[in-house]
Image (cartoon, rainbow, N blue to C red; front, side, top):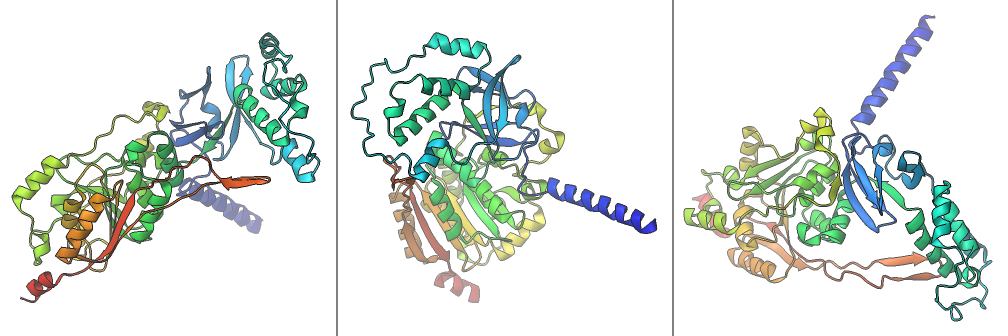
Length: 457
């Protein structure tokens, strides 16, 4: 009996420990009330950031559905808009891995060379099912799949189409009569791709491959202390914090009295441990007034000129966050906010040892002045990476660093990305792609000969 009691006690303790570990997991698997989610409607036709709450709704077409059914569901779940007695609602379903058309192609049953679309004429006479008939089916409670099956059965040309044309027809009707919603977890890639697709100017036209290259060139890893100038809404700060995973620090610095907005960081659903590692500090607090090197001396008139010319890029309220109620966020979520002021001990440590890397994304500022002022805050042999939408500001900055002998290994890279469409018997690049991804200036900070002579003296 004692052994059974001890076994039961240990099992209960193990279950409690597992539940606590799942709740504190840096990458949650389930959506909870108050978290930020990315809703993908109809395979990318519409991307919306939302905050889950009992009052949050999502409008798909002319139907407004509550987001309450999404709470507690794992990320990656698919939902379908269905009609109920209380109106439209989101019903979770498991999509099939292979539909009938794709299965027939795999089996070689639809490889008839006689099938093509040359004899088809779009004169609106192929469909015998009228709109009144469809409305009648809806009033009778027919699902979207039933309506699509009825449309296929009453189409006189569906059987004459090729397999790919039949699949396009099904997808078109599915988007209209049976829209789907995919619950996605906001991450660096999903957030960057969404903004680049909908509002690229708000993130400085920063593409996902360029963002990845920035983090790699700056050698962002565990236990790194990264100094960042983020004027792209917080996307860069959130990406660095996600890679650090609660180790090290990401310090977002700014010139002037108003910090740069980092609202996008809130969409990552970071835990309290990760949020505590995201800090903001003005440039004047990070500069050491008792430094022995000449690289850290900045004239007062240059400070005033920079403060007036480099006004922080203030964004208007994000229109991508279309639904959600801030009042419904749990109190534990409200108390955890990234971007607090670092402690004096931490600032003192950075002044004595320097940061391990520097990343700058300031499309609205003069890059040359920013980099020459920020490089002395880095440790010697620390890498840095600067992003800009255009080439000329980075070329000017590169020349300035070469003449001042502040860095070595300077190079300007232009990221290049090509997307491919992967379908049965059809693998080719996308017909419409974005051919521009900005430029990155990278290098390594060194101790110049003038500063080294000053140290010896």
